[in-house]
Image 1 (tube, rainbow, N blue to C red):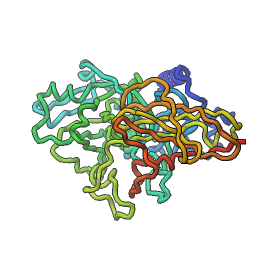
Image 2 (cartoon, rainbow, N blue to C red; image 1 turned 180 degrees about the vertical axis):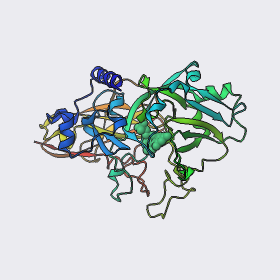
Image 3 (cartoon, rainbow, N blue to C red; image 1 turned 120 degrees about the vertical axis):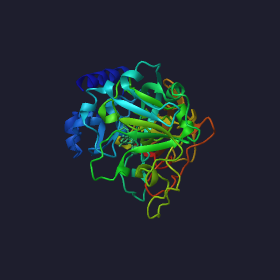
Image 4 (cartoon, protein in one colour; image 1 turned 30 degrees about the vertical axis):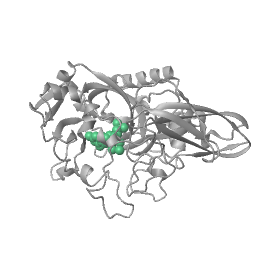
Length: 400
Ligand SMILES: Nc1nc2c(c(=O)[nH]1)N[C@H]1C(S)=C(S)[C@@H](COP(=O)(O)O)O[C@H]1N2
Ligand SMILES: [Mo]
């Protein structure tokens, strides 16, 4: 993975991403990690930028808010990792071109090898990949699960074959099809419930934007991110983009896997368990947050300051971002800056503000082209999904 790392470093230099938290404190990445009492990166993600990441567990790694930096594209070395099961053995990448994806629920079902997919016309989509539970750490109810802050998200480019092209080649979907169902290639050990497999169904309409991808930011997808082949569902939360995808099916019903039926649902906070009739976590609602300044930036000088952050509309483009320096009492329109990489990508925003001495609560809120504005309050739910509350994402800075 050394070459991947070199490419990422080069890209980071090109994009001018801001210094990591480690650099700000004058410590090297490893010293920084130790200073934080942090766990080391697991082997399959050892090539990541250690100083920029928070290792919650070997299967849950997030990007520090202070390391989100400038530049619209998140380098792979700084992209969060979330695995529900142990990732497959790395040797699936050694013979990546032989990897097979079975396409079912179409007139002419058949498997495609990655080598065959690579001969078809490709598309590239830039999109926000964000865990359903990003922002869970801000729920006062402390739901079970990783207490992600903002860093279980990144904006990355995926290249592959559009699912709709495969459907066309295979004669169209079955008449009864209502869902696009992707199955992950993890090996479920014998004796373990097969319903523990990672298999997600999304409404059929999502197939219009979906890709069967093998490149992340112009490089082969690393194992940590689902290589050799991943199903990409733009605008939907991360769980719906199935890694190591081995089967894509057009189905009349949702998968019976527990990750579909009794997980990733917006259940009442006091519900006993998750009910398959509760709404599924699918499309991402509009969301934004500030990455600079942050409390860890230290005391700021009174006077002119620049607020920077990222904003996205989920499935719709960003129309406007507003910022507040007084905890939401008054708002000012921010400027959208940097490249517009399409409606699934995030936009960077900046606002020039004047900060007087004292403490200031800085907040941002996005409005998409449909007129949906990021709400003040989170939607309370049992597992802490889809936190878009601008208040939860606000930060307090000290000015002297
Ligand atoms: N096969 C498979 N696909 C998966 C998962 C998984 O555990 N196995 N985790 C999902 C979840 S919950 C998220 S948030 C994203 C994380 O993608 P990343 O690790 O590339 O950031 O992958 C999704 N796809
Ligand atoms: Mo996730």
